[in-house]
Length: 210
Image (cartoon, rainbow, N blue to C red; front, side):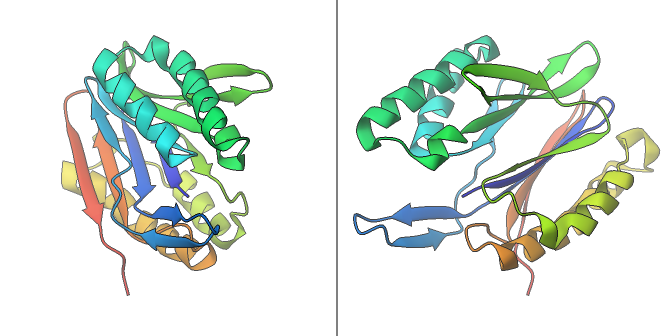
């Protein structure tokens, strides 16, 4: 499964995604590999998502050819419909959801694309807030850490350097991913973290800590 923390600041964004890939065989037995980079680049930033992995791969491939965010709702709907014809109804298909960053007049913005009732809806994440993308919705093991992180959000301008700003998030997110991976075996403790401002972008891998 996938665990993503999306942070929308005033004009910049931070996105962290785990690296675990779950592979099921015909006997419904599963194994894990912590090798998947779930954050992908496009012309204006990144795109990622949670849900059924092959469906997401097909959406990413089509989107990176068109580079048109307005097509994402249709891409999500069509890819899920096609996958249902192959494997039938699946819980991950219902929860397949996209996240992407883009340029706006107010700086970099994070937008989500997902199913709401019978419709596919696009929403923008509000400034100075966080949003979680997770299959297992029991976040009690990391609830206090998430509250502290929300209360500690900082814009790049509030830090003396870019590295200081990045480290503001790397340390608490390392703790959050480690604790959540201990409670949910489908999530890795290692993660990729992406920083984007109106003028810069960085992608860094954070290894699992002992």
